[in-house]
Amino acid sequence: MVTASHEGRAPLLELRGLTRSVRLPSREMLHILQGVDLTVDTGDHVAVVGRSGSGKTTLLNLLGLIDRQTTGELLFDGRDVSRLSDARRARLRGASIGFVFQQFNLLERRTALENVMMPMMYGTARQFWRRERSAMEMLDRVGLADRAHQLPTRLSGGEQQRVAVARALVRRPRLILADEPTGALDVTTGEAVMALLDEIARDSDAALVTITHDLQVAALSQRAYLLDEGVLHPVTSDHAREALSATVGIRSGRREVEDLAEAGVGASTPASVGASAPAGIGASTPGAESRTTSTSTAGTGGDAAWPA
Image (cartoon, rainbow, N blue to C red; front, side):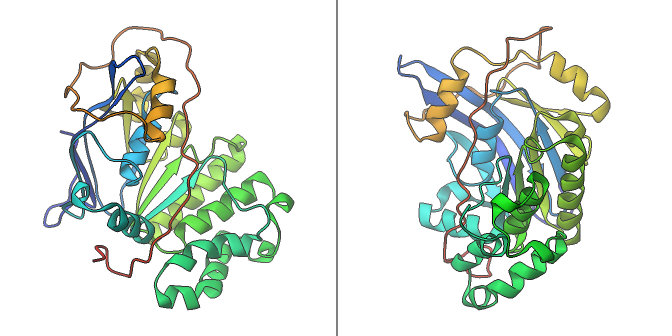
């Protein structure tokens, strides 16, 4: 099992034998994730790298409580979230998890300030009444206080991503999930955004999980893992490039399957657990992995991590 827990307290996030399977139109079962074990503690920065179609987005959907696993356990603060109703999962997601995506997903007809304020609309009464002040403080934190009243179309790509970072962090989440956060940025801007994201996460003692195919982004983390054929393998930064080059790559139909999985199509049945380490040199030409575009943090959860 891949673990890194601190003694004396439960990990913030723990995956035990997590699997995700979907049924193809041909009725064949495809196992996207196979026996994933992972522990993430408060303050950790973990990167998961993998080729397009390797299951990274499916894993992020599970970590973010957007989707449910087929088998295995996903624990948040020591409790199995699979036992929660959809409504309680949504409240927990809104109160404790922040998302940063590659495509920013800003509301084009709302200013930077209004975009950052949006998650506060679904928070506690205190958060709601303090939403403008909190949003301005976070925009100042990311260096955009003077751009608060600009529409996204008037902002550069790097500025838009910083607004997206501010929006993800304005409710002070305990877990930050970043899905290819630098994919739409140039190298220099991407490095600056990642440094900012890492700094803010560290200052707030939040856990940061970055899903990426970029080894330079992965190298900024404390721990890196390779996701290949649905199996998670710990790798060092020195061996990450070699590990990626040796991955099997996407299997036939993977893109179609992940599209179906993220749309909630197909019956979930138990998947086989465990698989061998990456093997084979070379790979099939990577396809475009489908991405989560929902940035909903809706919910009426309070300050407690486990709302009733």
